[in-house]
Picture 1: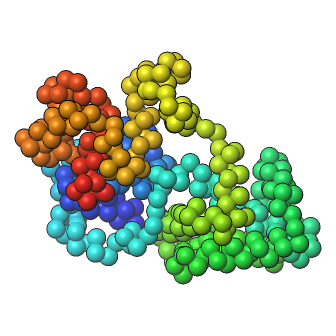
Picture 2 (picture 1 turned 90 degrees about the vertical axis):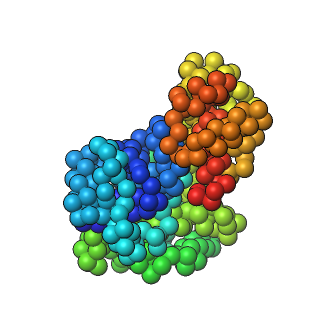
Picture 3 (picture 1 turned 180 degrees about the vertical axis):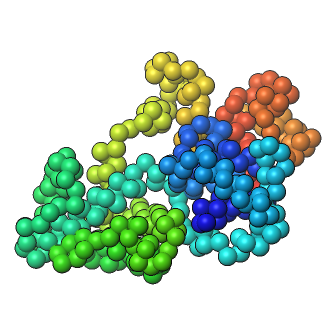
Length: 348
């Protein structure tokens, strides 16, 4: 049942929304239309949250929510939340969690597995016990951990590492602490899987998973914001980030940061300009709203302002319709103006 609660929460804006696009967002389909949808409806935090969610399961949940009167079907693919659904949202636990999947989906789970492994090794090290089965049998991961331990080896390592751990979990709720600490393995400590912890605490499995994600993202934010206070934890994040295979967007980001234009990057990478433009939009998703205006020429901005007066529902705009009125409008300018309006109106 809890997956329906999550899906219902995604319609909290009260606007008419295309539910098929929501499915692609939760699955992690990286297209400009899906990411723009997430940005405009403030759902980017849930991007790629359920990569294994089947379409049949999702559609079944949508149908159930309609049958229960929590969603109203407006068209074949369009729905909006009902007043009854809004009342249900008052008790929805997602409002109490801090999930930031769009920011961390590329490495959060890998970081957690590495942190579990390092915690196990240091726990046994603190008892001078080398006779144990490592929780990660991957020889490459074991080598990485050995290199990390060699790099940070000191008489104070055990004390400093667990001092950072204890300080870090203070930013979590009691339930979040339990769901993370319960997975730890160490000297005379048996860790449990998320499924086992959910069973022990009588949690829905989806709820246990969301607690885990919320706790993990809170920790990563804390580490990023106070890296001087979490030197060892931050070094683990850096290690995982460096190991991560850079995707095509990362490469485009690097070239654009060097001052190359979209056209130049497309030529250098032998890709279509439209593809690089999509990368550019994705890279800019997390920028403050006022920064978008630096990419929009004044005359284009004025044309867009005039268009807004005639068609105020900017979230429903289609590029093909707007560009017919403003022929010089580039696709990324169109998207950035929408994002600018979103921030200006305080909807972000």
